[in-house]
Image 1: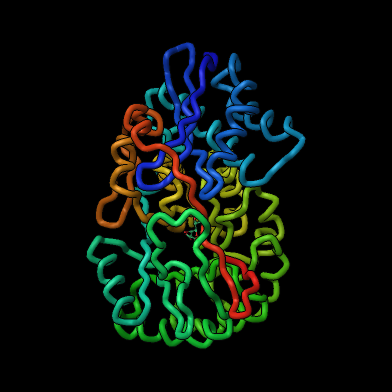
Image 2: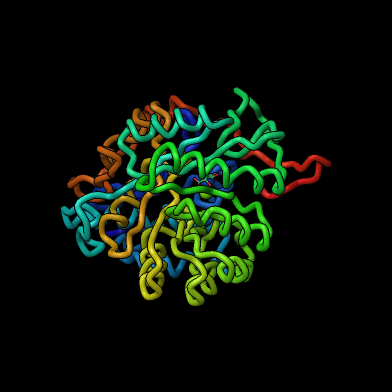
Length: 397
Ligand code: CS2
Ligand code: MG
């Protein structure tokens, strides 16, 4: 079975998504997510200009060989643009192979290791009353675990709390002060625990903003509140930073949403510096690569917590849910849903019920792409926010 055609579809039903659709001479189509938030057209161009011409005429069943050819054959390895493109090809080929087998994709990954996939949702508020309302809303939706983000006194626009201005073209500027944040956050978690009791799994995302010393202090200060995980405490490219954090706190650490290959985790996993790996299928080279990552992590007792915000498309999320159901060392899946219009473009796929996901029993990934609906939502340029300190200098966002 040969690949005969490939379409790179950029659409914006509420937000931008990039999807690769491969077609074979057997008349089958497979989908892969190539969305890279704020850099969508870079991946679309990499796919159209460089990857697709290499695929036409190749064996659609040779997933591992194709992966190695795109990774090793480019010479310029790694990086989010390249690995998102490879991920889209990989997932589309898995989708096709599972359709040939007539099986839902998770069956090709070893079959179900669990009945359903537990998720966490996002709660945030500028102050405690707003935050409590947001947590209650997630609990009412059935989420078994909640990520808690809060405003910080003295800061105007904080990650996950500030609402983006409508129709901003240039990046939104948020503000940041690590000292104010470190003073404020433990009290917020104390209040949340007092209000919601000891059983609710709570998570928090630091979004790569602290020095190792600050992160170690925060981990210690949060220990009484029994977090499920503390995420991305330090800038992620510095693996050795987490050695210092790990020596000073027992808080479970999660990292990896901006990683693209297993080498980004080499020190972290083999030295047992983390508890959860966070890479999404979409930015890490696909199912082939994330499965290998999770197998390495399993050797060290490390579990999955795959990245699943709205910028992972319904196709990327479906791939994650198949993998989550199959692997033994699943931890939790982030899931925030998508803008309503996305359901017009991406049909089918997983279901979300009682805070849990199930990939369904349709052959393949189970997602179809409506090209007419996609065309009705043209691309709109979008940026992620940036962070500034009080003196105007740039801080990690
Ligand atoms: C976040 C993301 O979900 C998360 O944990 O860190 O929302 C992240 O900010 C976005 O994916 C960036 O595109
Ligand atoms: Mg995060």
